[in-house]
Length: 172
Image: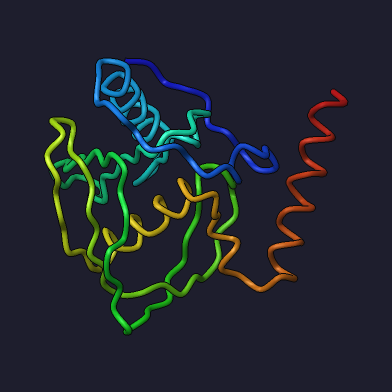
């Protein structure tokens, strides 16, 4: 296992639609192990493969907090198959958009379908933080960032800030 660098805005790879995983092999399992290590080190509650520069439909999630027992979940080719009409607004952040958070409205409950690391099809109903993280990470593999759920004005401000920061870093 190894910690991989996290791709950050304004990197254009974050806008790529990730490719489905055709075969769950040793390479995919190594990617998942690296993603968990990277996610825990960051620290974060979810990570999409594109955030470590790999355009595959792979997501890792562990929505536990603090001293709770860890519950890591690896999702291969995940998709939302149902969303509740009830919405909720909560603050979100992203490892690819460091030091920025904002309120985002999302469905309160979702049902997702994915493959586990053994290739079994799993369907889960989720609510609360797990549902929010699922939606956030599945957005990533579809080239969508949480700032896309904000007003155009806010989104443009955030993007400009990160473009300026990247130009500053490149000049150093």
